[in-house]
Length: 513
Image 1: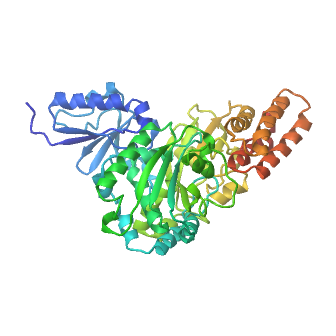
Image 2: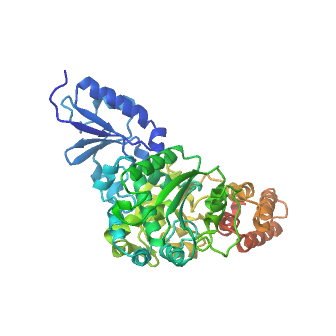
Image 3: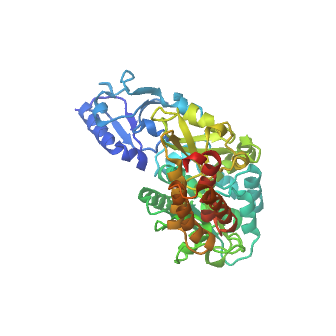
């Protein structure tokens, strides 16, 4: 017979990353333990904290605090709870109160303030932690005032171009069209990036709130979330959140009793990397093959179905609610120079403490790699870090004191991109990585422009000749010229950025070729 023990809440992450590390089995073992002890308990599947070296990270609620344990296996579960249902702080996996973890205390979580705190599908959880206050504030403003707030915040796109979000919105607001759209680019295809996935799997209402605000600000009444097919849980969670928000009057007609209407649909991508480029994505949304469009006209003027369209990625849109909730200054006061607010850093590869870190722009690469990441998992020296995905430059240790902001990274031939950092130790073959960037480009090219379509193929051939020792000096010069042609002549970022790893190896690691 169950005893009269105080109710206990046990939190186990439900995102794809934690589940791949055994979170489902841990949750099942915890449910069985609660049953055996006769405890009035609940297993809550929250989002991840993003600290993947500690996953599965179990949290046991004790009043206003949560006691953390990790990484937990099913074999560790038996001793997590005392017989009275309280958290066993003497367990070898106990990490103390989760809010006291150094990896969380060092961060400034704005976009990801609810990461790991709330349940993804719970609208009540979302609203209890500041959700939809930004939308309510937006409804009291004119479209021009909303756009001005986003502009003044300094929020920029989290893709390669880092275009100011407010400028894009103002263009759509002022454009003429019979129908306007908001399109969320959730085709997160860069290696080492997973921030978009974490929003959609752990905090999907933030994305929907941001899209709704974008619609009100620009006059758009229809939105699409274009999610890569490799993210089935993101697709399911966003679709469920759309239904929940619609039922609650937060999407659809007369949002929160206002005169504004906005609807959102999910569209599934078919696995083409090129569809992460905004015009290729629009082609795909229209049911066509994903190929790059000539610009101008820009999508903000002539986008989806030829109508004015906001195209932002997940992080940009999910950040909008806190700007409208707390004010432009709250966000702008973080960061440095023209890089305002926070950067969602995704740290992966050969690193001891990989995961998601949200930090103010301006933190140095060295601080991220060593203070946050703890150096390499292998214990060997870091040889290089690739910033900005598979098309990002390979940055040598001499540049590790460079601050992570758009202009500073550009000055050393790199880019921030989506915030992904992949770490390599001194056993890496950087020549092979340089070759891979061009081979990848050749495979994923839409084929529309010659520099990308032909240049990537010829580039891999030239690298092979260099690595085989065939006339290396002449072929190095040829490779450098070919890279410049691709950078200057390609229609989009695929051909324009694929040479960046090659150029960085030629500059910083010439012996690797």
